[in-house]
Length: 222
Image (tube, rainbow, N blue to C red; front, side):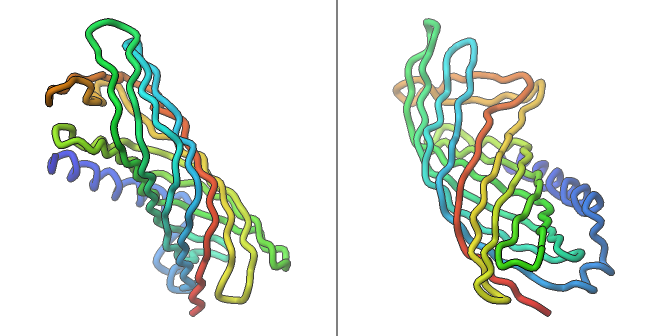
């Protein structure tokens, strides 16, 4: 497990460098702009399901909470890192013999690095769009099943309602896409009596997910 986490940390570092290069971030720009935006939000996540030959793994929709910290790297453009968590339940419904139905609690976590651009037209209402990439961690809350880490990408859009120069209300929607790749197994405990069988995925998109949230943004202007 530690080996997998270390590999994922290295991947996140590489992804961060890619995002920074794509958004034009460099040391000079960060020092020149310097503004910081800290946000927190809560809302509802649509979780989707994964369909296998053996059956369906259904993740149930639920409440989600998260936050981010961003640094202004160009006018109206922020590079940011965010984290969100959804605690919900899931179940497996088998289609073939040899597999038993399963139901349990799961946690869906997103760690994303991205870029967000605001379209400031001089109005208190400011629309924004952005993109991100990073990791999705699926935590199946049973002692005999390890966490599953997957690369993911996301799109975000919404509106900031500026209350003052330093505080804004934010309403946003995200489309989140965890990915899996050939040769990487994804296993879900299904048996009884402590036994655990599994399902292996061989390439493509796990599930299309998304959330709708509202919260506050605190801007620290330097």
